[in-house]
Length: 216
Image 1 (tube, rainbow, N blue to C red):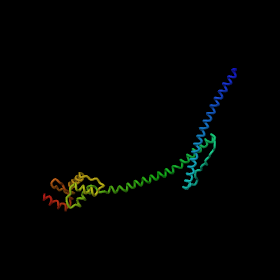
Image 2 (tube, rainbow, N blue to C red):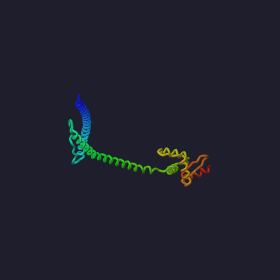
Image 3 (cartoon, helix red, strand yellow):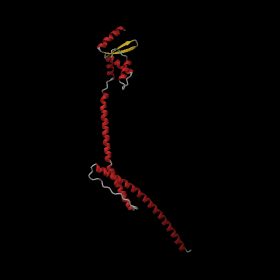
Image 4 (cartoon, rainbow, N blue to C red):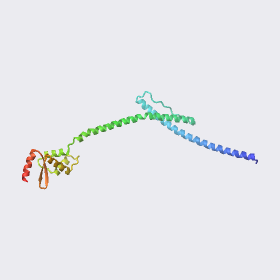
């Protein structure tokens, strides 16, 4: 075999290898583009469906000029240029859909604001009830005035706890309050043995307290 024939054979082999590689790359590129086109077509159909729903909503709300949409295209083997056009249309429809969605968000925000105002108003309406509750001093003074006999701090605590189960009333606090009332001449203290009893500082209570003190 001559040198020319050998060179021609080697050159032909190189061309064949290069063309084979180009064919493989071309086939893979076609598969990739076809896959992209199929995905974009699905996205486009979904966007067109959403667009139809939004147009119906726009008309139902009394809109005069609903946003115009495009009919779904179903090419069997679309070219690369048509795929680029579909990408552009898909991007446009996404922007249109986003432009409509904030209306729902604004309405939802308005509902939340009204709900918060209602809750705030309810809390404000309940506040006067809490503020209007009598103090422990008033409760103790009122209890003593309603009694015909002296009462100990423990007895007063039990009676007030039963009458006001929603409040936490401790005997030590009641005893301290009673002593403060005695110091202000708003109550009388009578000691019988190791026990201490209290009465309201009224004329009738004072009259009862004097014989009891004389008996002791």
